[in-house]
Amino acid sequence: MDARRLVAADEADGSILDSGEVLEIDPPRRLVLRWRNEFNPTMRAEGYSRMTWEIEPHQGSVKLTVIHEMDRPGTRFIEAVSGGWPMILASLKSLLETGESLEDPRQSGTGTT
Image (cartoon, rainbow, N blue to C red; front, side):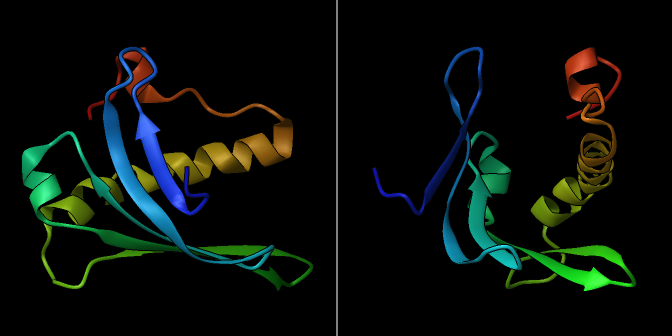
């Protein structure tokens, strides 16, 4: 398997949720991924998005910048995933500070996908 290839699969049935590749990696400063949704035909048809994680020192701490974009404006995919980023980043913050991530509302039945 190509080490640059990314696949996210459903733990329950193994179906492919997302696929993509690593475009750039500069540990520990930058990670750039290209990926698309595979299970929703409408989202899949929009094509690949580009997600960039940038980490830099900031006033004695660390600043994380997440940029998620597509080559065309007004995509439903970016609108859909943008709602998930606050939860993902809050969970990452909790994990780094306490060793415990936040409960995923999609897993508990309290959120929507």
